[in-house]
Amino acid sequence: MAANPAMPTWERKVRVFLCFFGLVLSVYALHVELSRERDPEYRAMCDLGESVSCSKVFTSRWGRGFGLVQYFVGTDSPLNQPNSILGIIFYTLQLGLGLSLSKKAALALVLSSWVSLAGSVYLASILAFVLGDFCMVCVSTYVINFALFYTNLKRRRAVEAVKEKAG
Image 1 (cartoon, rainbow, N blue to C red):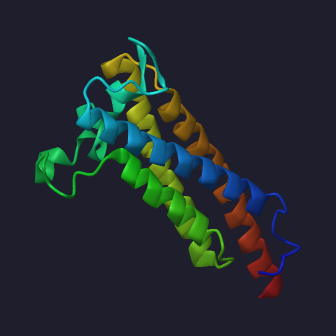
Image 2 (tube, one colour):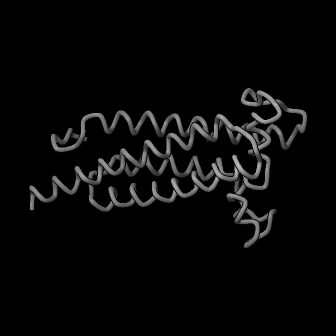
């Protein structure tokens, strides 16, 4: 893809970094959850104490389908996937759509980021006020989601500016 002078030069590198880091964290979260399901005594690297435990968070009811999907389809439904799977899908989508310079892709990036922010705020409040836990992996993904949102807003403005100059 040829560089577009109207697009922020930092945007592609930042997107790749954020999405890669988000994917690594999501895959790690899935690994922790699956390991804990196989072995209840499994202790993850991110389990630092009683109130700093990512495996406790990942294996809670809020670790699958945001704790909400189970009410609509049941806990054992294939639609009630771990949040980490949703993260893998989200970061892959962000990476793929980030390759396009179209207005529609820019809009999809912003809209999907809004959804991720809503999910981040919801899960952060569950983490703090319901579980009373601190999850380093979770908080890191919230930071990544906010950074991607900012990046996507910048992308959308740049794409709109290019389209206005061209048309």
